[in-house]
Image (tube, rainbow, N blue to C red; front, top):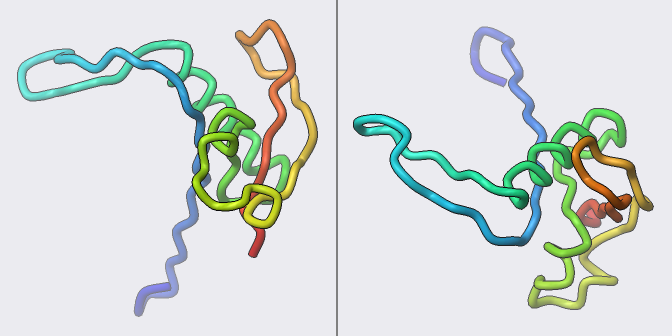
Length: 93
């Protein structure tokens, strides 16, 4: 909160996978691929699940710390554009 009483909040979707990164136009870069789409769809679950950060099972599996102590499962969710449900997790406070 700043001095004007404005509060900003955003959700973060985390996923692990391959992506292509390149120039979209002069001075602008973008990332494309299935991994980017899954991360975007997972981010949309933040509001539904009431969590600021939501991560896929693929992301959690690549986490260096003991995942069962760092993340809590929110179960599998159907995501637009994904053929199978994706299990998602949120960090434990």
